[in-house]
Length: 413
Image (cartoon, rainbow, N blue to C red; front, side, top):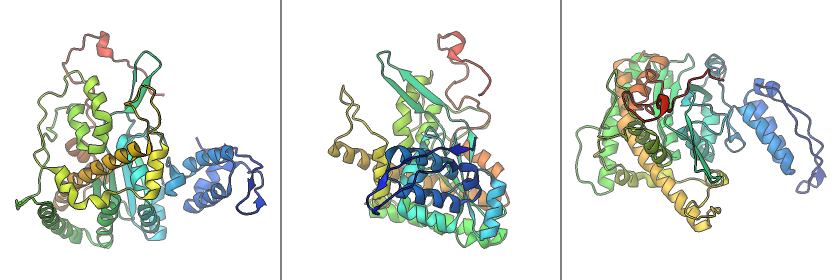
C-alpha cells in the first residue's frame, strides 16, 4: 500500500560544506504519480544524504516509488499497470519493455531470474541508461513465487525461492508484441538484442513477420560463427532445440523446469532435488555444449562496477566455513567469475534455443496477444504451465509417506 515514509535526520553534508535539513515525509503516492521525474527527485535527495538511518528509509521509499527493489542502483521507474504504461508510451513515442515474472519486482524474494535482472542487468550502467532513454518500463506477475525454508534444527535456516522464470516482452505503444527475450542475458547482449527491435516497433505487422523470418536466419549465422570462434568445426543447418519440452496435459517436474535457466539452477536445483519426491528421474541431457559456445561472448557477460558492487552488497557468505564468515576478496572474485560464466552460458542458450522459437511463433502468428504468447512461453519453454498449481513441486501419484503429502491448503493472504 502506498503512503508516506518518514525519513528524518540532522546529519551534516561535509562534502558540500553545508548542513542537510531534516527530511520531510516522503509522499510515495505523489512521487509515484510523477513517474521517472518523481523518482529522480527522490534519488537526488538520497544522494545528498549522509546519515545512514535516513538513507535506509529513503532507500525503502525509492523501492516503492520505482516499484523495483534495488532501484537505488538501477534508478529505473516501472509501471505495474499496463494501461498506464501504454498511455506513457504514446505520450513519449517510446515502446514498452514489459517484464513478466513470478512474484513482485519490488520485493527481495521475487523469482531468481528477476533477482539476477535487478542485480546484473538493471544495475548495469549501460543497460540502465539505454532503458531510461528508449523504453517505458512495465512489470507484471505470472503468479506468486514459491518460497521454501529448510530448518537445520540448530538455529540455521536456508530460505530460497524455487522454480519460475522471467521474460521481457517488447511491445509497441498499443501493446502489440514485437519481440520477447526469454530468461537471463548478459548486459551487452541484452542491449544488442533490444537495439534490433528499434526498427520493427514502428513497422507494420506484415513487415514484422518478414523480420522474424530474417532474424531466425541471422541467428543461425551467429550461432555457427560462435561455434567456429571457439573451435567447434561443425556447421549446423538449424538452431539447437532443448530436450524435454512441454507435452500438453502433462505437468513437468520442477527438476526439469529449474535447469531451463542456468544461474537460477545453481541456486535452486539442490533444494528442488530434496523437495521433489520423484527426484526428476529420466532427465534428458542437453547435448549442446553451451558453456563452450558461451566462451565466444564471455566478455559480453562481465559485470560492470555497479553490478559487481550490488551483487557483493547482498552479503554473500563462505558456506564452506563452519562459522560462515563473509567471503574473502579472492573467494568473492571466484564467485563473480562463476556467476559471469553461468550468465554467458544462459545468454547463449536463451538466444539461440528459446528466442529462436519465439521468433518462429511470432512469424507464424504476428498478431498473437501478449497474454496468449505468454501462456505458450510459460508452458512450452519454461515448463511451468498455468494448469499446474504446484509448479512441478508436487508430482501427481507420487507417495511421500507424509500425512496429506505434507500439503496444507489455506486462503491466500
